[in-house]
Length: 112
Length: 111
Image (cartoon, rainbow over all chains, first blue to last red; front, side):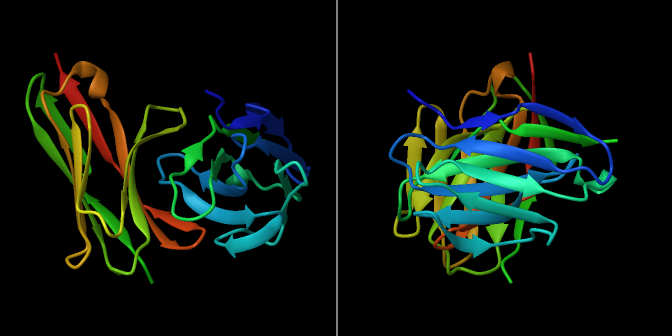
């Protein structure tokens, strides 16, 4: 069965650079969620989209922005990267409503 | 503000034992609760989803219960195996599209 796809899987950036992470949800899933997991931390909710509109927002810094496109894939754009942004970034998708979230493998971002 | 806690933080058991992991949440107004497994440096694998109207869900050797009124969920693992070693996280859905995770329980099953 198709799963959530994230790209790239690994990314190394310098401080103050920008990064774009991509997420391709499971077919027919129209809700996408982004999470950040720092070393030894539990995942923290950043932002979610339903039918291409932002549906909820968590602890997402102003330096980050995200959007969902017409094919339901989503991109997380991160600017002015800081050392503290180094983390595992997960994307999850679900069918609308109260359904189960399915997580992608994550993108490991390292900021040097 | 919803807070999710998990006890214990770490657990080490010999192979074959039955064990219980606990998850507590402060606000009973949840939509659902989901248990995940995470291997070191890897992604999150969904184990069980319990809707707010349900009391328990079972999948193989796993059984999860939910008591919304007391703000508790338990994950029961029967006949533990070394392959069950991982971090187990519970997550509550607090609004239509927002999920809050607990800190996780690190499980080690000793052969």
